[in-house]
Length: 269
Image (cartoon, rainbow, N blue to C red):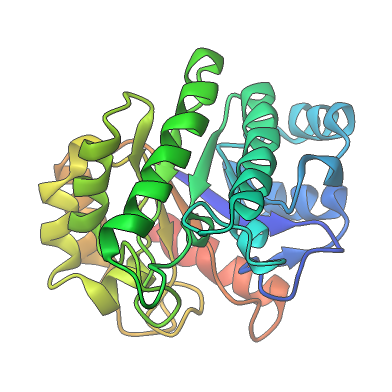
């Protein structure tokens, strides 16, 4: 397994769950010094980074960019795939396609979290699901020839009312039926929604391409009550070799959070 950490530019929205919200060069340098293998870029749109500069930094510090995360697309303006407003759907798809282009450049994946949108109140579930499925089919078709995998992230019910657990994500991926649409669990959300983190991982390991790690309190692993030794033991037994990436609150300070996550997870990996 490889170890990642989520970072974002200085101008990232307050809602971005990242450890380092700072100058990209400084964040990548810190990630390298702490022993991370890669950095996940949490971006609002593709204009937030200088491709050539990031390429140079990754080469200099020997880091990968395995994932472009899209949470801020929904957080700013509620752009989402399930919206009944056609213009909102189109804006969401355009923003995601821009991030897919970035992911192609870095040989990275892109995640679909809350940008999928909610199930709209006052209408049948199937209506919202169909708008989501149609949008996903379009962006997945755009991503497929670029070699970009789209990873659907289940998110707990207190943040959105659609696709809350790993089983539901697996069912929706089967409906989308695209080879480049997979699953990205987050153990923080799984702790709320899945009866067993380990059992859900085992049941769907063939579709899992990336995993977010945060403890039960959204702090660094080892600072809450999740059983990370057992979670990692199960992942090893299942042959999982992808990234486990710290998407955590920057507490008590960003440097301390990043150091705690790296130190604790390296001891288990």
